[in-house]
Length: 258
Length: 247
Ligand SMILES: Nc1ncnc2c1ncn2[C@@H]1O[C@H](COP(=O)(O)OP(=O)(O)OP(=O)(O)O)[C@@H](O)[C@H]1O
Ligand SMILES: [Mg+2]
Image 1 (spheres, rainbow over the protein chains, first blue to last red):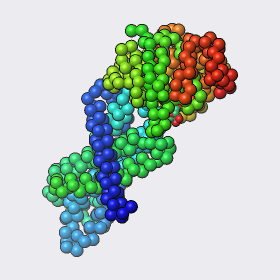
Image 2: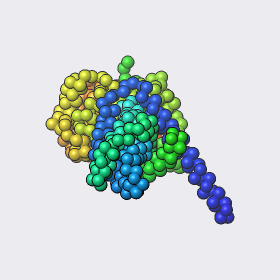
Image 3: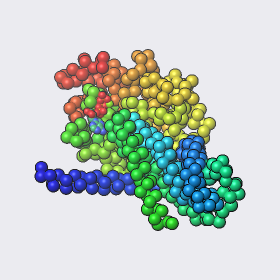
Image 4: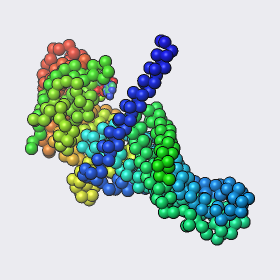
């Protein structure tokens, strides 16, 4: 084929593919959201998902927050002390954690832990006909499997992020004190400079990321094809697509919010 | 309400270019035991999935009373499904749940019984299948035959009016196999359910069935009583009956 034509064809195929997936994704998530409004709800299911998204991620999220806050402080304390701006270390750490590092790093960690697991679980249910079994028992698999995961993502990610924010600042505090800063110097101006809006916007971002993680993980799992290798493929795709979506949407939300 | 007759007319189904069913017509007798037989890959499981609305046929109709499941809306199909049970060929148990949770699932999901009642009922059915003591065990630890029995219990727990069994005794030892056969007949007697069994076990087919249907190359070769099958001179039927015993 003519090389120019080949390029055009490739771009066309990519475009068609993108539209196809986006459309199917949109329909699936809409159905999952509608699932919230059709009985029976079966709350036990929701709590189970919240536990696996939230409680089970607590440890990694705390660890991530602690070290991120710590290392961030290590980096800036050196530069700031040269301008005698030690009193700004605390507020800077707190701003960075609440606006960016808390939401984004929490989301990335949870994607690796939970998004991939959702994709794996749903796709193996698909290939072993468990989804068909649900359908035959008149239990809509979208409503039964995806709706609770979406809800859990949207509710638990802000909570995890709040914890990561707090732990990050605490981590920063210990590092700063270890490096000879006065405790009061670190905390003194945090509340002057960090406003509720910073925290709040960060948590909104987190809720959105939670939606991405769950919906992408479920989408990849729900439309798996072909046996065990399909399970592996959809898991990888869930992680990659979530990562990219989180980073891109973070940029856009930041541009709009702050 | 009473168990419905199922009228299957000219049902076709292809996957890509591969035509699995090429115009299948047959009546499933209400309140009777209907066996479907045929060689591996002839589309028996596909037919059961069409009957339960999991696949839509490419053409033709499947009527449960006045509802054509080939065309019906999902909400209508779901109403029918509340009266159905399906045993999948591979069991299709929920592997994140225990044996008991699997069996109770349909009762729990549709709020059909209190937890105590549900558990009692599940234990009773599992007990009949020799699986009572596995109630709290994770499904992933079970053997193939044990999974099959749990899946059978899950299909039967809602006292369905129409039950589909995809090879209920394959993978079970002969003793268990005949126990399961008895259970199927027993369940049918009690609830007067319409029963559809896909089977490779010719002895069981000829002794239990009220009506037998042989599929071959995507079409019905013969549909009739076991006696009609024994007397048939059709070469396909003769071959199948003589060679089918061991399959
Ligand atoms: N979802 C599907 N996509 C593509 N092909 C399919 C699908 N489901 C079934 N088939 C094909 O349809 C044919 C019939 O399959 P089916 O499972 O109904 O056979 P069967 O009669 O139940 O065989 P067995 O006795 O071995 O269980 C097979 O060749 C199978 O490959
Ligand atoms: Mg089969």
